[in-house]
Image 1 (cartoon, rainbow, N blue to C red):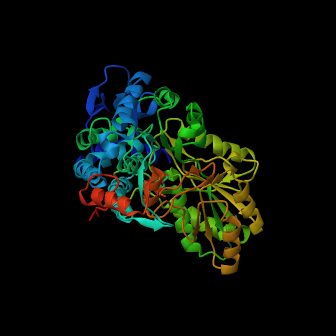
Image 2 (cartoon, rainbow, N blue to C red):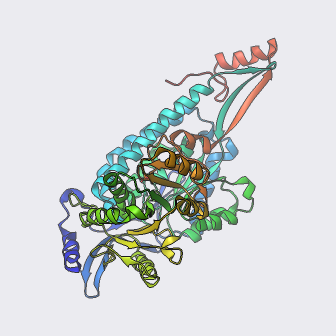
Image 3 (cartoon, helix red, strand yellow):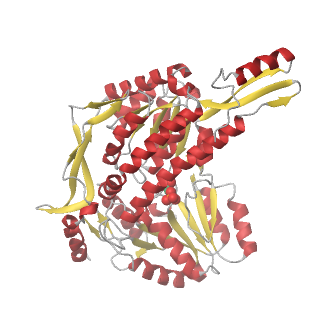
Length: 539
Ligand code: G3H
């Protein structure tokens, strides 16, 4: 296997021209108050998951660097956002919805021009396959377009008056203030933009800090951000989280905290805010989604769904299946087919046709995964598949580990990588206990045919997780569906339309329905004197 993988990395220089990126991208720019500033201080090297052979073995290729800003610059970015919001009186928060939409439409057109480079950077920076990188870009653009449609719909529904008990009123959604948006490295474009754009569209101003990997891919969009929005509405900073983001939270000037990452990181940052009651949090956090595979499951379907569920993007999805609970009667045939299917997956570099398994971006990840497997082996489990757990540089060949029990770290820890724990069970109650006792509650999958038994499992788990998938892997999409989680897995619900609600609050203007009041309201509406109180209908 090692020889095979060695050949894999030697193809690093053979990337087709269409998948290449500039030899070294030294980024010094960051965006504050509508200006692209140039950083003269320390830079952070960007290591690709793609390795090169050196005297010391395989090492992650350095493809560029990004600014390591300090708290001073991040506070300057925050001040720009605070000024642009201007206690809700700034140009952006008071702009008519139709005009905000125009700004975002301008951005979408500019974003589309950068598709190729952003897709290539997704491959080089985080090791996403070309197909998935293209999907991430297109899905993100579609998400923003769908958000515009949802906002028009929301605005149309607000373009009316309600009358109740002699009082008439108009209810609209208005912004919350300054948002801090931070996304994860596995979806550095999609997950960050799916909070950033709803936040902006609702009239909030924002400070956006890219994820720890997948940072350079925001660079091609900086000019588009600068040119599409009024100064200060969107500010983009780079650097170490603790120093830059910690200072923002401690300032007490962040009103909305949109964060996709670990629950521990989210808690630490939330605690830094001096007035927690003034901070609204929108969080997507850890998960350990189980698949419960019953003995009457359609074997082929269960295997296919579990292969993509556990291993698409090498298991680095918050929604990935992270533990397979398999009924003992099906264990043998399931494992036989599952091992064969995993064996067919092609390891390679992201741009290679048909590739599914790619190297991992986190420098310490292979060692961490190895540690998890070793711990399971020490406690009596085995690696079942040929080459399972073999490592070369940043590449980790998927390991199917069984039988996994409560004694092992793999039973509890979110591996976020290509290790697949198999937990055999006899009684359904054991599977239910796993779900109920888990500190996480994002999603689960059930594979089976007996409707009565499935219904019992659904009822037992419905108060535990945010989504139950029947005979299908766990996933976030379609993006119009609510994406939420219980316990340590999330705070708030996201979807195209829910996100607009999350980043806003309802405000209403009401009056007693007297002739005089009606005349005032009538004047405001017909002479279009207010941006808030209006019955204008956006087409
Ligand atoms: O990492 C979490 C993503 O939101 C998962 O999205 O289920 O579409 O891969 P996905």
